Length: 205
Image (cartoon, rainbow, N blue to C red):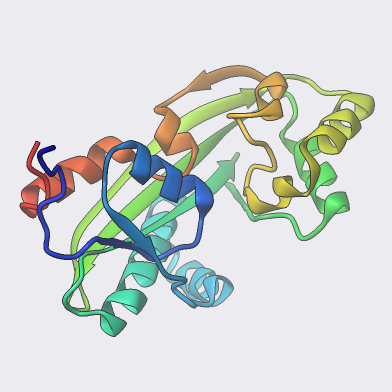
């Protein structure tokens, strides 16, 4: 079988996200993972002082992850990715616990929000490609009972998502409209990534 991935080493994903890994593997890429180890809250605080908008914040987080791992593995092609949820100008974060998840869903209910997903590719400790994409989603109006049922059905995995929902699972029941690429919603815009990898000569197709 001909090889799709042409680089001598596998793509190094600066994350241990099972969702992002799954997206890359489903696209036929050869991938390894490594935790970036960056302090995301510190990056966000610095970005806030600089006045970065949510799209730029997602890009900064993605780049910092890629650069952190690239400095440890300068010969590898490293991918960093991140996602920022914005609703009416407010940036939301992953909930700390069940109560925070519930409160976040109630705040998003009946409102449109944006998911800004960004990625960066680094080689030799330098960012060589940056890309992003945005999806727009609207949760339907939700009762307290509906939110509680969803959280019970979805379980603790909801704490892994900035949106507190998992669109690929029970979360689909929460939505009124979804506009955007599925991979962008999951936190890694695949089409811009694949275009960037082709520019770097890493793909045969």
